[in-house]
Length: 288
Image 1 (cartoon, rainbow, N blue to C red):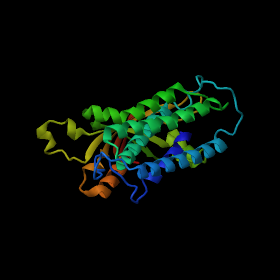
Image 2 (image 1 turned 135 degrees about the vertical axis):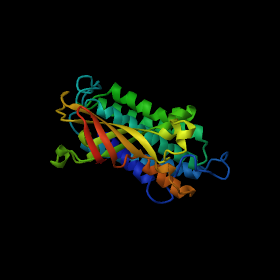
Image 3 (image 1 turned 30 degrees about the vertical axis):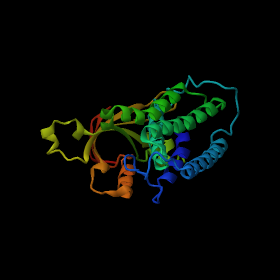
Image 4 (image 1 turned 30 degrees about the horizontal axis):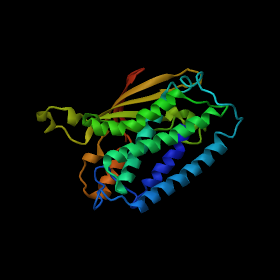
């Protein structure tokens, strides 16, 4: 998850509570056939600056160890986090794709092309970090990570082509593990035991018409995954959850600003009643 911390910082910059708040399906320019080169320059310049900053940070913190010839990480890649990192790669790639799609639409590019360009930016960033990992003795290039990055970057376009997929969205949440509380990680996204990945299912869109009239629009169902007791060598266990989820985009509030806020909130799984269904059953009045 190390490489996602910088990407998350970039995304949060674009999602700051100023006029950089955007909402897909609500960004409308006066003439979508006219593309603003000024806005594209702002997007490109800011992105280049943050990617450069991210590289410097990563190079000084994670890549400053012994260099090596390009190699693949086939021994530990699928063991150290029980593949929980793959969910993170997918999530952050689709998140970055959506954000950049919004930005490209803001500049006047049509939605279809914006999704493709957004996916390209997200995949390029992640591919660069994977290749750079390949030259680091402590990491190595990961085909699993690259595949998860590609699928995440492509998912928003797939939702556009296949509207039924819009009923299935991916979220994330964090709750400090005991290891994190004891100082094992400097940033909580680096701790897989503190990280929960969720598949939020819009039940309302899947219900029969009669049931839709009585089932609240803002309540969804989410399937969650996390890991526990990791030892870095394949030890540990998976955890699966079933939870309610809140669809903020179904709540009242019109206008670009409020729709943007609701869309941003929808990327995160907020506390809700839940059940841990594996490896043992635990009922939570509220699962953080």
